[in-house]
Length: 394
Image (cartoon, rainbow, N blue to C red):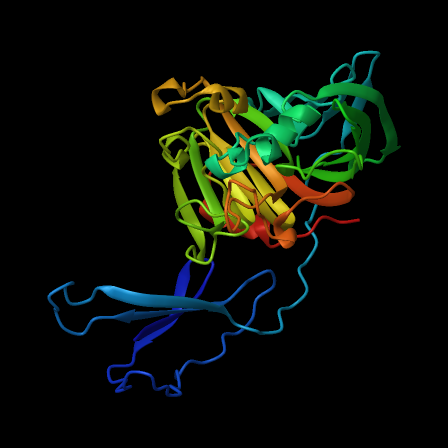
């Protein structure tokens, strides 16, 4: 049995327990001789345990991992300090009939009064966004979602119009302006066939370029259980390297994540996050995400959750994935889609043809609230860790 204590991707302690000597159908308490780490603000500490073969067997080589587990170390962590904004220049705000522009030292964000979304986000001369955040409640149906004919979730989602929601922008209001922070409030309705989804989004733009996105969502009671509750945006194609702190390295979901350990610095290209199921469907989600980062290897956009998030990145649209019946019909585009989701409905039930899904994994109509940050940042590992350990001043 090998063990290790890790934090921020760094190994603090490790060891090996050579002799277990436990007979079948028996148990034994094994003491692991580790020391409690000295806690740092904003840091999680994990114990990872692995059981491997001591000798080569007919079915596997020496060192083959038979089982593993992971435990978060219960330790009191110091309070996270606030982000220091004093070194940044004051914000300026320009408002017209069409837009609201917020400009800081190294960035400029423009909100469209026509769409109610960020229309552009520039940082140190780079364009970070092709399309700003838009609410999203759809996923490409899985095989299980389609089971049960007209009783299936997929049938009920399409019947309710969740695959083709119409957006009705109610208002775009700037209601707080200081030299450190500006708030832009968006109110809109997403109109389905059977009911509406009302969304209030407050964007708080800070003078270092951080954008706090605070969502309050009211889902109409006539709608069926939702595929997901979240937001989507698009980045230019060159932001094709993805790094995250959450479960990995493979995809994981609400009801299918115990085989994916929590880790820091999981990474790969955006294309590598696609899982080529025989029938194209929902894929590639990363659950329990603390933060995620997309970069062109010079600068990037960091997502930091106020709570655990679901994050996925792809180079194709939901529409393409929904309509495709074979993998070769999934076409990459010259853009990167990132989904920042509060909840994603389960993948499985006890069976799919009824369908039969456990209640605790359904997203029923009602009220949802979730919050996250967008942070433009240079591609620097130390800066990424440092930023993840700060909270925004109130």
